[in-house]
Image (tube, rainbow, N blue to C red; front, top):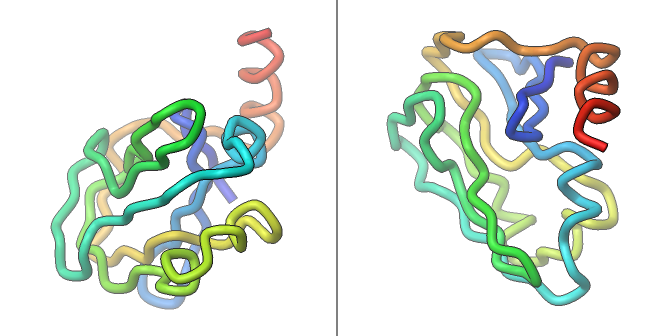
Length: 116
């Protein structure tokens, strides 16, 4: 698993990658929130929004990679509480191009310590 400075986590999938948000980002969400995700077949560039969370803080979920969205986790859209309870993937992308450096787990933890 790899991590971005925008608090996304990236894991390999059968034909590309699955993207979710990190536990750090989950802790920023208030009890009452809404989540919106991009559409399947959207081509997303690194740094563009794959979704947004409206909570006590609003934040865009920024893609760490370029790629085509092939699946959106409809379970999260139908029941957003799943995001808090089990932190699943949000979108799956193919034709992925890594344009920004991503961090290992240790590097991401060091980055979080730097933010404190």
